[in-house]
Length: 384
Image 1 (cartoon, rainbow, N blue to C red):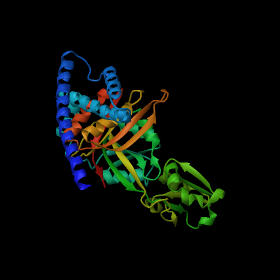
Image 2 (cartoon, rainbow, N blue to C red):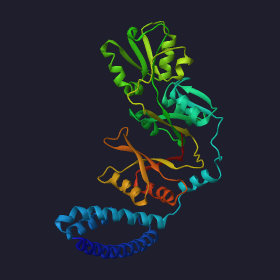
Image 3 (tube, helix red, strand yellow):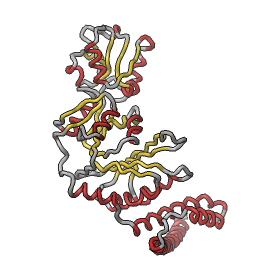
Image 4 (cartoon, rainbow, N blue to C red):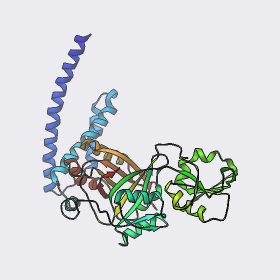
């Protein structure tokens, strides 16, 4: 049996050697086609030709392997297009602006003293994230995420700090929706451990509580704990966990409580009734720092992009296949419905790739050609 296995492997090796030779030969021809397309001002993508070619090779294959051949040639088409784009356009205007941000227009160190917009008030998790990223920022507080984006658009603040996802409750959909409305760049990100606590005024016990205030994300993150109160206690969402703590502090009622961060207990003079009431101890929220101008700092190893893809079969697959062929790791994919466009979506991608790598350059130069709208949101590092 072992001898048979060795023979089979030798046979596979011979076939693979021939496949590699033929693959390289095919790619060289694809390169010549790229030059012809350039001289004739013809786009790289020829949908009709690819469809005809795919039907032809599948028709020539045995029925057993027809679907496998389809997958193989779909990948070959992606590789050929990627190689052609690389030969025809190794640099574009977007990449030139990225190079500028890396080499000339950006300071080598992330700023410590800046005017930063945050949603909420003192004691919010956004403020904690802001302190983590900046250290000594001048924070301007706004009562909505929309106003944080607007403060950046209008130049009132240099930066804005926004929550984008939670490990328990998932993505903050409102942020993704606002991303479609505003132009901005991501300069940094961080993850904050979320430790929710139940607070009330001195003299109030758990049995006295008739209403609990907190943010809607915290309601989801603390759902197990909140269920223990049954229907006798009203759960009221508000704009921010810190605002919830402030509301309880300023209320004349003796039957209200708030779920908020530990920082808020001393800040608003509240008593801790229960500690760490979140469903999971490993509960983290990821925050991004946005700016109006493109800023790229040393060590940038994450890139975020947004794309509107053609409303046709295989559109998303083509993008994912491009990541695979270039060798870039996709760490987040989010989709949000496009306003006023039925069943069409904006796709958000977080990619793990160094801004200095050849793969990054190739990606940036290619993606805008395979999408209806392509937005580069920035390359950055994540502080811990």
